[in-house]
Length: 124
Image (cartoon, rainbow, N blue to C red; front, top):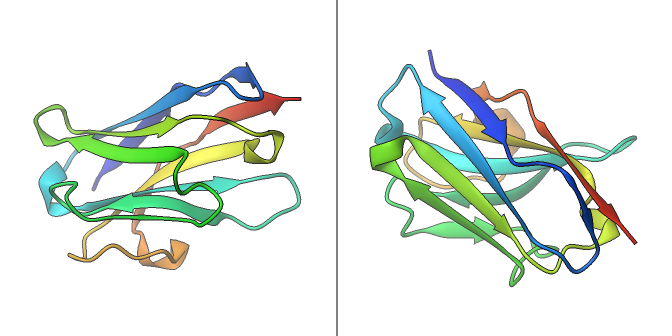
């Protein structure tokens, strides 16, 4: 059983930056593909970014590509999401998730473990 705890969400002005962190415990972190998802009020949960076991293969949603960067530190059991040039439409609860399969997927149902989420609010 893998436990995930996110942190780093807060209120920020448009154009600003934030770095989210997600610390994993209870499993071998490098065995998992890690993903970041987000859910805004009244909307479905959507894929934001994912990274394979080494961080060498990444995927991004088109809405964040070029602004967000996913990275991981397997020695610290931590995955990060660096968010730059934030926009009001990035406002959402951000979740990290772990997927035991070896490839980066974008469907929430393919991730077995989830954190509790961290709120990101971008003011205009």
